[in-house]
Amino acid sequence: MDLFTIGVLGTILMGLMAGDAAINANTLTVRVDLPPVVQQSGLTRGPAEEIFTTEIARISSIPSPVPAPTARVASRRTVIGALAEPLKLTEMTAALQDLFGLEPTRISATMLQAEAGLRMEMVVAQEGRPPSYLQISQPNSDAVALIRRAAQVGYAEVAPFRVLLARVHSLLVGSDTNIGAVRDAATNVLGRGDQAIDATQYSAITNLVGVLALLEGDGVQAAREVRAAGSVPGALSSAHGIFELNGAFLSILAGDLEQARLQTERAIDAIPGHPIANFPAYVLIQRGLLAWAEGQREAALQLMRQALRVDPANRNAQIYISWLQHLNSGAPGQFDPASLSGYSNRSAVIPALMASVFLQEPLVRQVQRAPLR
Image (cartoon, rainbow, N blue to C red):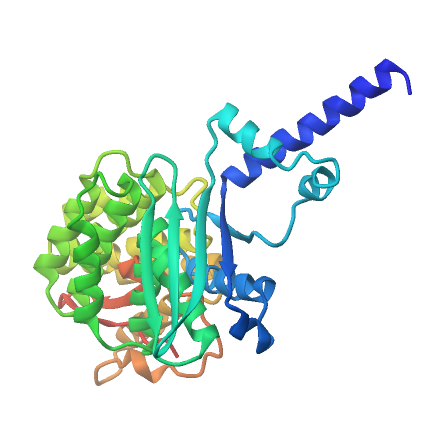
């Protein structure tokens, strides 16, 4: 083989390793070690890591403007890893990561036998932060349950907002009813200070506290939290789009239509490239609520119809259309949003967005939970 060919192959190999280093820098690598007694039951390291990352994927699947790292299992090698191992180059990727200043996030978990069940010890390593040492116990021998719980606890160190968002989602769909516990968990994270987590997560958690306040019927506290969320410097513009839309929703509820108009326009500025696909539909719904509050019911109806065209499965748009049609028809009696139960599907709820979670009748300034079915 001539020197030119060797040089080309070497360049390709170095490029692959550099690419592998960069890709791994944007992922969360999970390693789970198991005691012999668990492995003898049939659960080995690979499936255990898959269970761990699947639980993280479930948490991260809830619509959010806040990005989350992609979890991968340590036992599944990358392409370059498969090439590098027989060539004894497995340390090269780590060296390139050091050279380029790329430090992937890692969760290393070890399951141990305990006197009364199992115990999981974890180390969470993140760039620029000291490692976190965590320990949780399982009072029986249910290794799968322990792995899932460990995934939630470990991921909360990496992406606390996404874990709290999943808990709020559970409140909304009825699988959890303890609002106070979720609020306390959010308050504890915020109590660490904005230096412990990045600005986007800190502001997004503050906004979630506002959603919880409105769930408990406290619109004044909800508005206070949303304003605080929007005042955190350095948060992503897509997150600010959520805050502005929530602020507009609450301003209509408070009767401040001029402020609601300004906040809605600021939310519109955040639409380009917004990571939540149905976010533009909720901007149209918000504009429809504003028109409704101003007594322009026909304009409101057209905006709600436009929102439904943008997002055909948007349940809230469907309800508002029927609501406005009921009012325009002059039919007697109040409209019941829960009466529309014939739809088989709806867009995924956005727990951080009040226009997704709640319905309001802007003229009487009343709010209620949006039905999920």
